[in-house]
Image 1 (cartoon, each protein chain N blue to C red):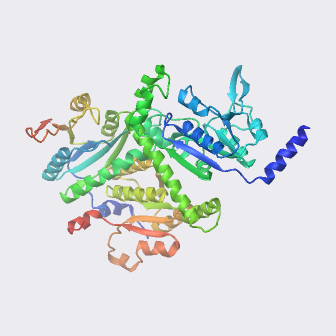
Image 2: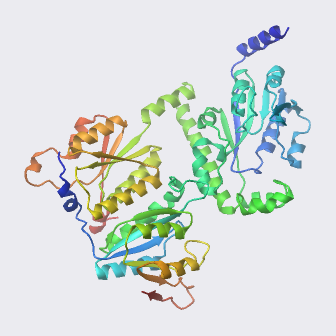
Image 3: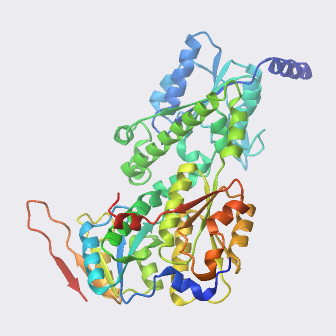
Length: 386
Length: 166
């Protein structure tokens, strides 16, 4: 009997197209993601769709519990782990119930050991594969690529993360926006945490500067999603994920900056970093170190340059060689560089004037790699230009 | 193309200067008065100014973590300082330094390098940047001449004056 049910479910899933994923994204706990998810679920149900709640975390908030009233809830299952009873989403029950739309809160949640999947977003993937639409929620600090940035901004590092690919694969991402002041008001009114936790929250994560920064990150994230979808839409009928993959290969940039241990190089590195930020590119710094010892002044400049590279998140590559061009070409090929940035070459003197200038040689030897000479802004200003 | 070791120094055109004037600043900004004072001193003494961007790293992160958010504020400031210095004909040798506090970041930099002067503005709001006790620490511990500028006064008030102590 069980086998027959399994076959029937599999057969039904085979007939149903993959479900659609909609993610409600917020800057912090308490902005109203879950309430928004429930409101949307209720609207879908009122429009005649079969909607159930697969998993709901009310965190004891009265308005969240009220928003769930009247919606069918799939009961949680109890999981025993090291003598503790944990409540988790009942994935088999959700799949067996097979609604049209399932509301699953907290996409970044880590499941108790021993369940079908380690992470809730993997459960969601299985629900989608069964042809069930999913509406879920996520805080921006749980996004893997933003984890470091958010930790830097807020001083709080979260352990439960979601790969960016999960959000990128979502059919829709909506942001629940609230000004930091409004959120703090909600917090002080006891709408986010119980009274005992409010003071501690206000002094730590819930500071205006934190929330402002997180809000910016959340809004930017959604803006980038919209931008990528617009590019995908312009592909004329191609599936978005196929186009995204191709675009990644076609326009994935990697910048290689030729540096020397001298003060003026820092400006070159900063400009390269800004370009890398705009392009979403990796940044490599290459110093072709001539054989021999460095004097104190160059040692000092080298240390400063390495500090700068480390703070910017750039990779500092040192190659000892007395053949500059060949070494640059080898490193550029090895690191799949798409851009080479360099300072203005020194005017050649003597026999060196007979040689092909460095930028031209690099362009000859590295077809398909852009070579950019970064101007000395000081010189422009000397001429009175702006 | 070969690059001889002995050509590096000549190529840079940036030989060792006599004096080095440290101008620390944070993501909260750099005092215009401190920069102007440092540039005036550097120009008069043909010294190099060293604008140092101090960054506070949260304890949850390793000290050598990349800090893109802080850099997105600090790097444009470094750029502005270099432009101002370039216009004033003053050589610049920028630095970045990380620490658990701004004082820690500054202390790490001072432990690595020698400076002849440190020019710093006492912030009007001590919650940002270096606080009063940090300035006291600078005066007591740093083996360099320390120039502390008073905070800018309100437009209606009397203009601040620079105080200096060697």
